[in-house]
Image 1 (cartoon, one colour):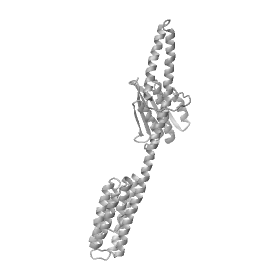
Image 2: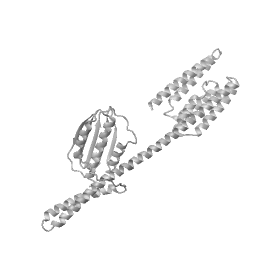
Image 3: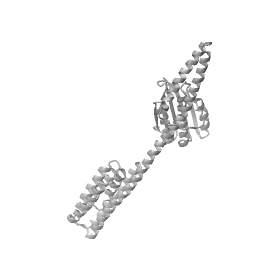
Image 4: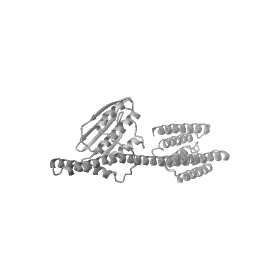
Amino acid sequence: MRRGFVFDVVAAAVVVVANVLVAGNLLKGRDDFAPWFLSSVFVAVGLGLVLTARRKWPMGSLGAALAISGVATVAGVLWEPFVVVSLGLYLVTVRRGSRPALAYCLGVVSAASLVGQVVHPRWSLVVASCWTAAGLLLTMAAWVIGRTVHARRSDAERLERQREHQIVIDERLRIARELHDVVTHGMGLIAVKAGVANHIAEERPGEAREALRVIEATSREALTEMRRLLGVLRDETDGFSPPALAGLPDMVERVKSAGVRMELSVWPMDVPEGVELAVHRIVQEAVTNVVKHAAPATCRVDVREERGVVLIEVTDDGPGGDVTPGGHGLVGMRERVAMYGGRFEAGPLPERGFRVSATIPYKAQA
């Protein structure tokens, strides 16, 4: 956006200078030089101001350019063939693909040129015809180019939406596979404990009650994970052992070799396996992004639990930068947090660096 504004300022300066120079040369030697020249300068400055505002108010700027250029053409003080109108039409077409705007512009160019030549004939018929043809051709060319760019951007946006949708689907499938293993582990434990409880119920009732307590806790956790699996498709894969919070130090050690100085703070906590897996994956993805986009840098990972909510924060002191849409890492982290009804934020820090923050509640569901 800033680069485009700079381009508009430069283009506006060129338009103003060109109009002033052309007006000075063509009006030289006339008795009424001063009023005509000042009028030309006024029109040139007005068109320059309109051109600098076209990105913020595209339709309003195009309307103002048409009005100024049309009136100035009729009055005989416009010396460029609707260049500002063409630039304004281009931007409107790129953003909206508007056909009525082309009709209005062609109508104003034709009518103003015809009336201006009748009211204030500045040039011969041949020169006036060439000037009018140049205005019409510039307008048509601006619309055609803008229409092409608009079509390409629309196609690119559609493909990007499809890609983001596919990323979400792939991520959900991967999450489903991992949660499936967690639930399978829980159901297996329930089956074993149920068999033990049934075998020793009469001889050792205390141990049987302990087994039943394990079954109760495990079944609740497994049911919670099963609810999240509903509606999520799953592929068959080979066996998978989900990583736990205890695996974070090993991951940090591996990352250090990539030029990232790591600071890890993980508070002891007792959370369901699904939550543990989500925390591990979120930290893994966030640290991977640091390695990809910020190394060499210092990265701090803070994982703690407060009142049934796991708090995750990953910050770095790298160059920062805006969030790139459609990335697999952020999409995956957001999906994992959304599964638990938590909150996810990712963005640059005020001065430099980047921050990923996530909260995963689990006590309410359990």
